[in-house]
Amino acid sequence: MPESINKKLAEKAVLQALKDARYTTGQRKSIMKQLSGTVDRLVAELSKLTGLDTSKSPRRRKQIIASFLQDAEQIIEKDFKAFEKSFTSEMSSYAVYESEAAAKTVNTAVGVNLVSKTLTEKQAVALVSEAWIANKTVNEYFKGMQESLKADLFTAMRRGYLTGESTESLIRKIRGYVDAEGIQHAALIDGATRKSAERAVRTMVMGIANEARHKTLVEDADVVKGFQWVATLDGRTCADCASRDGLAWDLDGNGLDGNTFPYETPPIHASCRCTLAPVLKSWEELGMDLPEFDPSTRASMDGQVSDTLDFKEWFDSKGAAFQAKWLGPGRYELWKKGKITFRDLVDQNGRELTLAQLKELVDD
Image (cartoon, rainbow, N blue to C red):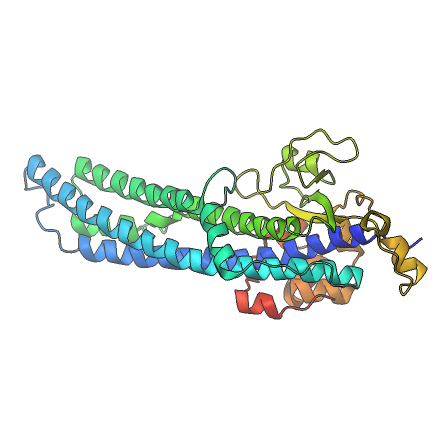
């Protein structure tokens, strides 16, 4: 019996998730580089301070630090506005890419150009600005990162006031340093700020990808029956996501095949890596008689929801050439020797892709 087209589309969703993971890594590195620039500007401002030595009165020290924090707040606010503007522009282009990739995937699987409408640049800009990604907008994510950095800075400076630290000591706290015993002390952006930023970027990228695919395919309601949830099934998959894996909904959010879970577009939580695969109607549901297709092709488009697809099992089933291509030679050898786990593979650190590279990547 021919393989269902909907199963092929679920497998393609897994493949796209691998590519998106590599793209996300690049975006995470980009935001950390930008945050490092902010730290440099904060240190430059902090270096101008005088009068923080313990010979000064506590009241004067407090005034000096309070004045610096006012200036620091302005630096952080200005930088984050620039970060958000740059990210929004990048994500708008990314949404267009995801929209076009979704259409191409369906058309290639079927062998007919059934999906023709993709996002315009204007629509992509609106999508990025307005999308609710795990119940937050892009603007709210950046405000959260901004507040996290500000809170870490304010805490470090106020503690410095209480303990009578010098300007040089406070600079070391912000930049990070190795003490006399060889212990590494983390920089300001290596704590809650880094975690907050990386988690936010990972969530936003996946959310925008899913929103772009969803919006594109909903426009072709004559072709698409609904969407199937595809979870990344590895050691980090939460119970909520694993329980949704393989479930499907129609375009109005009603469960298919007895599914009673309410519909939500992933991600449903921070760092969620789930994605959506389209469920196409059968040829009969489309009202099409296509004699030019051989029987196996026509039978493969049966309108049935794909069986649950285990991400690890799917990857294990691919040939060595495919695995080496997607992991890279070095990582592939480590994986084959059991030196890294499937969890390490999914993260794709060190294998980041730019949007231009993502567009050039050709599926096997």
